[in-house]
Image 1: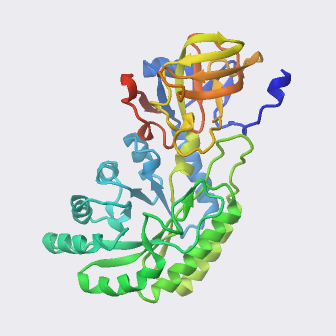
Image 2: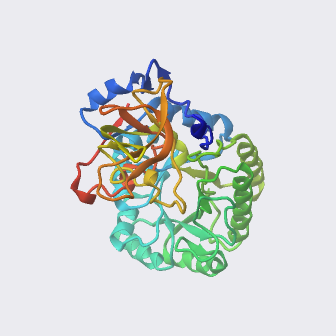
Image 3: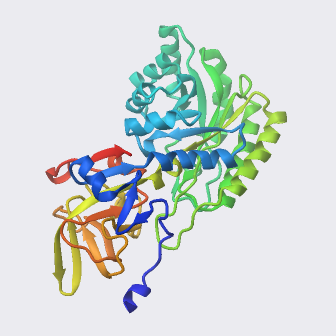
Length: 413
């Protein structure tokens, strides 16, 4: 137990209660949910937690700020449908996601389409659907203009700005410096001068400096800088600004030592910007675009132990799912140095008997590691391992065909 006390500590995963020995997910014990699903591995997303997260944000954000769901975080149709009923808009990153969003009942007037390398056919689909295209390159503009002329409807466009600053403390920087995303801020005045003559319906700007940030002060600074930059660019715009997407960046705690993001300073900062916009940009709607923060903590990945091995004193729990279903937890999706996600044995969550063990998947590669030497409840074959913080960038961001193992299931509980 001395060794266990030295292990780094994760923030408590209290969103899923424990009754007796078992984790409760969607109001039912984990083993019963697994029986309902019928097989492992699977992802489960708790609709009650999704609703609670949106409500929490609504209570802090100014009512004038529109809340958009970036569905790349979790494109499961049932999740998108639920989110579309609660948020103000959906942000998509491909024509495939666009179709899912529209099928889910999202209002095309409140759908925006971002992403570099949009194919001509995708741009035409976006114009036909009447959604807002966040233009990432000057190349897209004549394609959109041609689609507008052919379809008899002006393409709705906003320019995605590659800002001249970065989001400090961001886990993944998507703006500032040389980037594949957006148009460099210094090039935009010239681009804006050409838009009016192209038959396009210009609406505003999209700025997204980075993601997975747990520092409220950094997010507030990025929002303020984004607003000031948009204000300067608005002087060159062909028409009044109707849409100003300030991006997101809201993070969730994955690793030991990380703490939940404080929302109150961000809400106060947005109230200040809303008040400024009343005078500076009276026709503009301010938008924040969140994916991971809305869905990440509401999801778990569940895999069953099929073998328990001890190799030279180290316990290995071999599971029926691994990096083929959950690349992120293996450390191979953006981590420079691998760190453990919060993990437990969901069918022994109430047990006091614990040990240091490693959870590995069934794949024939040492990269297939779900938990490395963590203090976990003592587990046996048949128990269910749970990876928390798995509602975002899970199944859809993983190589499910790798080594030919079965695909996993997703359920909304």
